[in-house]
Image (cartoon, rainbow, N blue to C red):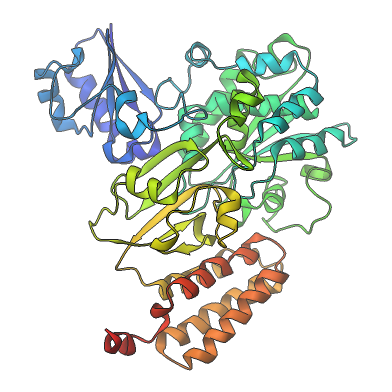
Length: 514
């Protein structure tokens, strides 16, 4: 039987993958099997289908339903030549230049086949963890150098150790899958393309800290991911990978997937916990830390999807194998998401240290519009806007922080030379005003005043006076906001004012200057 792999990732579906799968089923003979996989992250080639041949998988893309007849005529079932033929996926330059540790199975396995997952190395990490004490697991994660991939970059092993040492009859593992940053989709790709990896990582975390219950908080805009994760949890429970005795080891760990309600602020861990408890998503004051008093007031390890999904690799291959990648204090790999005005949008996984320029030019191929790149925002809507002069900065937590930037969740949004950075600065305030939980005054009121003052600057009203006012406002929000929502909103504003001052000159004066 010949097997054809068609992605079921949300991005591929948006590009027509379901229609392609239906067209294949309508045209092909009965001895053809279609397996729906996740995406490999080459979004400009989606839907990218693959055919299993004796020489390995052969990819074709982007495929439309109308291409099926010509593909059949070209004998694509045996890897035949065609205008859409891409060759072996692993030899496509975009993939060949990557270091895929976390995403090695995405686009390869059937997301809901635990047998397929195990055949590709899955559960080796959990099996190793079962033979270890919690302290040893935590020390291995510490030694790997793994840091939170959600944006903060806090060492994962240190957080786990705090929860492990806390005294309580019940502890929790919470996965923050409320991936709301602009230009980010890595968490979704994991949940839709390799859900058992996240389940395995959370189970290892449970064994490490002594937690017997876990929750995955998934953003409401991810219905496909929620459906896939829920089904994967059912399968893992049925197969003994979750339950009262994980793989018969005598230690319990169970999981639930919960759907969020559309609030960006629930990406902040304490607001997420409030939502999980059934209340409005409002930020909690710290201390106490969630590691000590988290979900339902009990010790809780809250980690991002990518942080937890990377743990199985560390346990299966050892701390040093992971720490061998990267630079400085940023060890391992970074999952970079390329979006915005970019020719080759998608996901790449590389060791920390590649420059921003390499990401957007060598991988991204420049702008989709063909115009020059003027600005890049890294780290979501609260990340800095950087000009071309900073593009040679390595993608590393400390290197970015030294230049007042954020690596964040690894999202990169590209803008060409038509962008207006004054309008983007205004948007940062507007976004904060809309998404603030309202608990603290600097964020709740400061963002609104920021929009009002930016409107005056854009209109040319007392520009110097209002620019000074914005700078003062940004300082207040940075120093006095309760959480990162208000505390980081000044970053895109200040960076736009610093690196693109000409955009804050009234339009008539800009024209005169030109």
